[in-house]
Image (cartoon, rainbow, N blue to C red; front, side, top):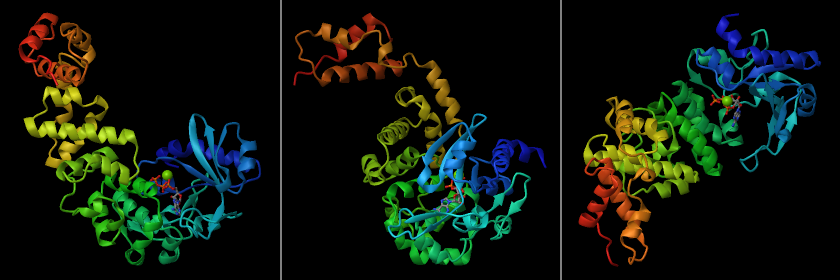
Length: 402
Ligand code: ATP
Ligand code: MG
């Protein structure tokens, strides 16, 4: 056993051993086996077992019942979480959403048969022995995505699998096998039955992937594009980012900045993303606009952009230019030298403004004046000193009567 193999899977093997001691059977399955066999970093480890969720709850101390009706629980073990799912088959996806019926089965092979692609239908026991009824290993060697069984039937069962195919192509830089590809292009319309939230999860993984260019090519060629709001109005290849983007706010800001007729708000609504996503996309957009005005990482840009978005902003600039010009380092340097970090640091506060103009009714002039003050100080046109600011306010920025 090679050492990386052991260290990656050791705690999962301990779980399997415990299940075996209680008379059951269990295997590591899915993405972690695939990623291990293809030499990639292994993420979450999923376990398939002959035991029911109720039995698993008895065997382990810390079990979180996340989807008992589908046979899934989370086992907490030595500080890590493992999804443990009872062997099952799925029948009848009448509403294209959930299988009408989940039937528990006794055999790992039957469980592997319900999985989407051959590379994802490989199981490994705790000795590292592989169960691979669909030649998934060979597909991995050939860097190929193959549906398990008849591709048309499998996509009819769950059309989301078509989006999964293209996102795996991007993530792994694999091609899609011809029959699987043909089935997608013939049945792409079925994606209309899938909720936008599920499509969004796969789409962002596609953008994150190293092979995103290939992924975008496939989305276009296999006619999946009409089902992707806003993206369907773009030439995805011509207008593609020059490096992969990692989050939805980055993707939205990237395209919105280049096409003024698609607002951040509309993107977020159509894709049913969160308010936080909207705020972040808007901040990134403002940053891009400021960058375009000044053609540099200005103090004002860095002041306005939340620090947690620096890596996103750096990627956006690289996605536009194709060059790494040390933007991230520059942003951190500029941040370090800012005279103030927020309006709380102003030596002359909103209350001082109000005291200066006691007869002036409160209104938007206050926040406008504060922002002017912030801008002048951040851009070093004004010192952050009470008297200096007061003088500046009186001379340059008296409240407007309206
Ligand atoms: P990732 O690295 O992105 O997590 P993954 O292969 O682990 O990739 P998951 O979505 O976490 O993907 O699913 C885990 C496993 O469950 C898959 O490897 C596959 O065997 C099975 N699976 C997931 N979604 C489907 C689906 N829609 N249809 C059939 N099998 C699926
Ligand atoms: Mg996974």
